[in-house]
Amino acid sequence: MVNNFSDGELMASLYAGIAAGTFLNDGKLLPERALAEKLNVTRAKLRRVLDLLEQDGTIFRRHGQGTFASPPPAVEANPLRTVAARVMPRDVIEVRLEIEPALAALAAQRASVRELKALEQLMRATLTASDTAAYAASDDIFHYTIAKLAHNPLFLTVYDSIRAVRQQAEWTKSRDKHYSKPTLIRLGEQHEQLYSCIADRDSRGAAEVMETHLLSISNTMLRDRNYTKGT
Image (cartoon, rainbow, N blue to C red; front, side, top):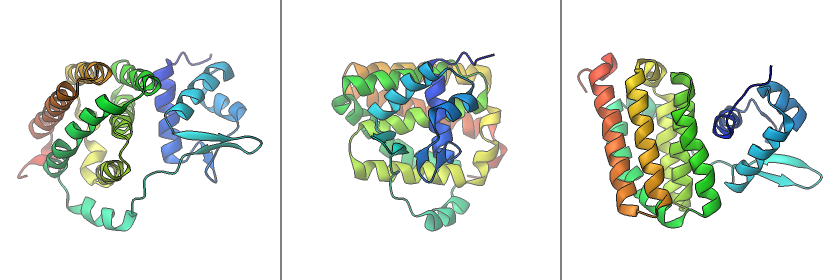
C-alpha cells in the first residue's frame, strides 16, 4: 500500500534522507523511481515535493545531469566533536536563546512567499508526526529552515554548528523518547504560532514566540531528564 504522507511529512523524510546521505550517491539524488520505491509514494507526489525542495534551495537540478543536494554550510567536524563531548543541554539552550529569536525575526522580514509556503508544510509536519522520532526529524528541519530564511550565510553557519553539536552530543540519543504526548502538542502549537508570526511579517512577535518555545524546551529537559542533573 502506498504511504499516505502529507507533503510536509514527505518533505521531512526527504530532508532526513538527504542529510543522512541515504538518498544520495556522490552528492547526486537517487533517481525518482528509486526514491519513490524507497519512500513508497507515487512519483507524482514525489515530484511535487522535490519542486518545493528546489524552491527552498535544498536541491538543485542540472539539465542532463540530474538532481543534486545543495552544499551544506561549512562546518569542521573534528573541533565540534570535542565541544560536543563537553556540552550539556543548558549550554545549547543558552546559545540557541541568543541566536534563534534573531533568526526568526529576520525570517519574518526576508522570507519570500514561496519560502513561506514551504515553511508552512514543514510546520504542519511537526503537528502530525506519528511518534517522537518523526517529531524530532520534523522539528530539526523546521528550525533549520527558519535559519535559512534569515538569508544570512554567516548566521546559518553559526546555527548549523549548534545543530551539529546537538546531533553529536551523547545526551541527544535519549532526549526525544522522553517527550510526552502533551509536550509534543504544546511544542507543535508553538510552532504554529511561530509560523503565523513569520508569515505575518511580525518580527517582534516571531522573536518572542521563538524565545518562549526554547524556554519550554529547556524547562522540559531540566525537569524530565536525568542527564541534566548537576548542570
